[in-house]
Length: 336
Image (cartoon, rainbow, N blue to C red):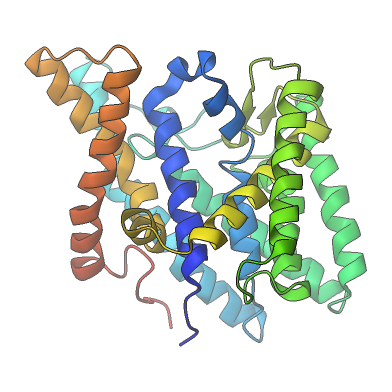
């Protein structure tokens, strides 16, 4: 078994924490620069981290099996066990007759109930398939792969501009190809993952922070950041999408490399797929409990407490899921 890279788990932990933070704060984040800045890289970081560990696994058949076990089975588990029941339950609660159409949005994307974050797993499966296809068709020629990834990214962004779309998340998968490529190049054409933090890393970290702040304060003029990969909808310039996303992601990666390990964050990072699929049902439970008890959820402090509660509750949830549901959360393979 390949040895884990400690700071990558920490980066994943920071990444999933940012996703949770965004879902907790929602509209309150509009007036917070720090969360607006995080909006640039909270999802790109996921795709860059995924690209770092891309493998062909020796052939299409084995590749599909691996990605199905790691991505599609957890998605199906969340969809069948949580999404479908929650849609029927909430519709029943609101006096609505649920129909097949209620499982789809206007542009053909699935309605994902209490676990909308699970869309990422399907999207990542498609991204891996795109990249694998480029890898095979180009005969592993990295320059050809890089050019096509950039072209596909521009195509995906242009679809957003022209209000065109593909069903599911085939369009978003095009847009994020440059991020996935960055991860692959980092793993295979640099020593970033294998060397201790160096002076060179300090320079890259500083440059990454500058690129991120330049994107937000200069290019976007501190305007509301609207980046929704779920809908392939971007209210920022194309240069902002990629410069902000890549700069912010490498800033987090290098911060993680410097600290290497932070107990809670590193743990939830190692099992980030569990947090991805369970944090929104936990959030739903907490908010409803607070509502029933008459506890105010308004304001930054209350939402920050909710955010911390989700992270802490995720610890026993992770332990339970890893022990009793390993096949459902990509810890063991069903399809061999």
